[in-house]
Figure 1 (cartoon, one colour):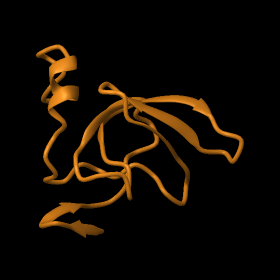
Figure 2 (figure 1 turned 180 degrees about the vertical axis):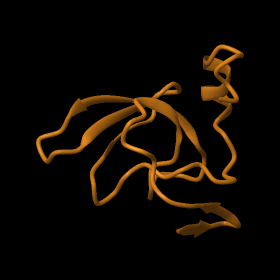
Figure 3 (figure 1 turned 120 degrees about the horizontal axis):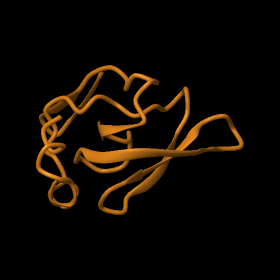
Figure 4 (figure 1 turned 90 degrees about the horizontal axis):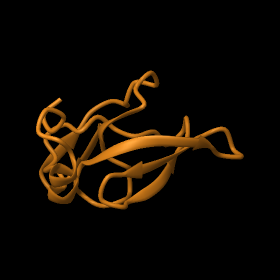
Length: 86
């Protein structure tokens, strides 16, 4: 569980999802819409957001469930209307 600036993110993102809303730990305070990419050399995965944020996740530092963090407005505008609230 991570608490930062009055917002709360609980748990980890399920491995079965290839894309969706999530937050990279230690990288800002907004939730982005991530797409999973290629495998890293250490066994993790690269992740890319719709607004251009890039990073990597591993089993030790996975993407977190969004909780009540604010969503990135650039990611929201980049998605079609039916995907914004999924």
